[in-house]
Length: 160
Length: 270
Image 1 (cartoon, rainbow over the protein chains, first blue to last red):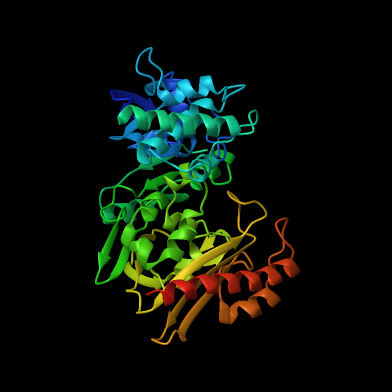
Image 2 (cartoon, each protein chain N blue to C red):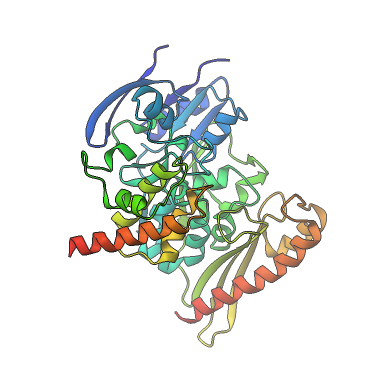
């Protein structure tokens, strides 16, 4: 039996790959497509380090089969910056030092972007609830929340 | 070990044929937030995964005659975004939206939460309290059963080989009725219920309760409707690292009172 052929879209680019039925989308992104920005922390949907969007919906790519991406649109951390220009959320993570080891950062930025895309003016409580599925063992979260709230304010200003 | 196959059939007969024709274990895939964890850990070793999400009607919510039809694989996030459902059944929605993180909500479904058959499943008590029914399809045709008849024990359901849930039906809410769901967890968020409680009440024009259903989760091997709850708590008790039997009995009473108060307030506002 041969591998399964999947046609999908990754960060706006039409993409094809071959995978086994049991391969997670995270395995495909990292090992086959060499998009190693998405991280594997737990592999069981608890830590959020592998966060991506699937047809615009925030999900853990470790909890999606590679074959399920057929005909879908995938958004990963690699698609967040525009060339050399960082997304405002990425810029604010740097300005607020909202990371230490950086392992959780791609997932947090993808998750924060999904929040601000759907809710440009979240309360701090809404931001904390939204990001509760992204674990960080270094920062204590405070700087992350400050960075996200500051990015939201800047993006609202930029849009005004 | 035989190699795992995957199929995403586009018709219900094809899905039934695949599931009932498998010689080894065949698993139904909805959102996958439980199944993929079990696959990875090796706890389940299916030869076939049948992804139901391409089947017509299994994703999405329709209002029908004042009630609701919720596709079995509809995500928790989509359920939380449905204004009509949130207004009519706030307790069902709050129970469903307590399952996991934002990321898990993007995929997790009512059918998955029910058929994973955890005693602590957060969507199930409120669904039972709401008198929800499940439409099951399989080799011997289609049947509609109350949600409480699906789970028969931890990890076990009453579904026969080849059967799966296509959709859930929520009846048109009676006048002056509403619902609520609360759970007790040691943390403030992202945890598994020690006790869960779904309450659905109907009041008359004077605010007097005329009908009520109280359903407890995580206190016994299956969810229990309250008239059976006392017996279930005494005879077939759940005691684990999250809580002892005595603690769960106490908390079940406290939660039932709190949940009922919320449901009463909501029903009175209608």
